[in-house]
Image 1 (cartoon, rainbow, N blue to C red):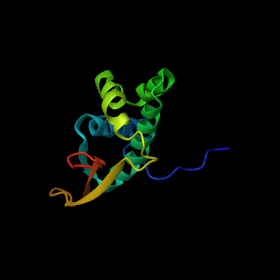
Image 2: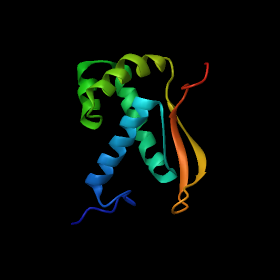
Image 3: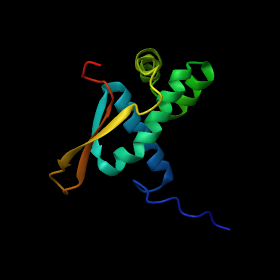
Image 4: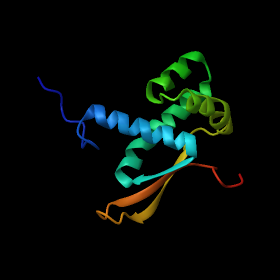
Length: 122
């Protein structure tokens, strides 16, 4: 029996979507914010928040779990040493999506996915 459909894919297939979302999360952790389409931002948000939650645990199993998604060891180190301690007392909601108009070429709705507290004094 075939598996039911899981919804629209953001690329050509599930493998491509997984890599695309991993790249968005890597850029988010590296730069603090990333500009992408609204659909991609909404799809990447739960993955990014899950990675921050794993990083808050701080053990080796959590680090290995994050390394499955974020392949860059420098970004994983930054996530565990700088980003996760900042959200230690926060129970969730580590990212925000801000609408940013429309893309010039194809008029796709754009958004900025950013970490809460980046570039502001909290």
